[in-house]
Image (spheres, rainbow, N blue to C red):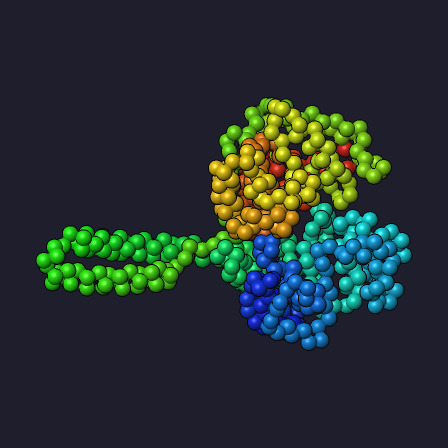
Length: 516
């Protein structure tokens, strides 16, 4: 890790806060960006990461929905900003038009930059629309244009989204070796672990009413381990304090109940005794008020965004040896284009299979075909989780209504309890699903599969909307799953920890590249 003290500041923010509709999302963040340092910003969806990037780049990008205060000290810093998605207008532009808008390089400098990013030398002359490029090509092109502007600071919002494994490795190498300063948002644990020097962690505590920002100038693994140790200590202290408080409270309640019984039975002929009991009750009431104040000062149990309490039931399983799938497809096509041929895939028992391949090779198309074959089966309980959740989720329904197939009050209560354990607020449970974050929609998917006791899961990038801290929980959930999984993923830790067999989709079919 580089020594931040030896690096000059290129950018600073002081006491930065912002809110959506009076709901505070960030509170008094102070942060300096040092020359040549890679900073990552993590946290659950909806905690303000993308808004913060936009605000730092140009406050006009958030003027329609966020109110902010504080100081943003840009100085002469030249910034380049990569959004999660190009604008619809940009997606419709020809590559040559998009490229010409930013680059200030000479032709030799331009050629060298394109070579360094493994982009074709003739790319600046392409008439192909930006939206027709693969995810990897689009990210590389956007990076190239930003670098052509010769920025001091790069602001990258989920640059690893939709990238194949090869392009992820390129991005990782780029972040490690680029001499400028970087602030990036990502859910990719491997990318964060291998590149970041500083962690900015945004959270929403107390039922999402209290924002917290933590700045840690150390590698990700050290931050996670230190955070875990801190939370364990806080939990231990909290349990001890609450246990001692409860002992005192129990003693207080016994005495108060005793006095109440004495007051109820004392004779009217004993006014002095009645006076003493009344005085004692006044003292006890004052003591009760003091106890209430002391309770508020007790160390609270720590909140964890990764506290996702989900488990598949034992019934959601398939026996060893059961033939799940015997799939053959002579030709895989999309949009009239041949993507692959002679595809063969056999799945037996509770196998967990990952499918990889470059962007645009047909992985999602193949998984959708497999879902069409498996989900209607009567001998299985198949469930399909697409990348585009709108394919399956009823976005107009509330989470409770979508999950409550019986319509019963008891089931609705059960579902609300589940959602509460997944950090949904009461308001979010009653919101249309369309208004929820990608991470919340993903949680609804997993809860749906659990409630339906699905024993065959077809998952397209299942971890893409979970925060890095939640990723291990999801991987553990799926590793312990007793059924079969067929998944498309570029998440390197998911492929390593969950999948037992990995196939690469090539023009010649499925090639087994790894097996436990």
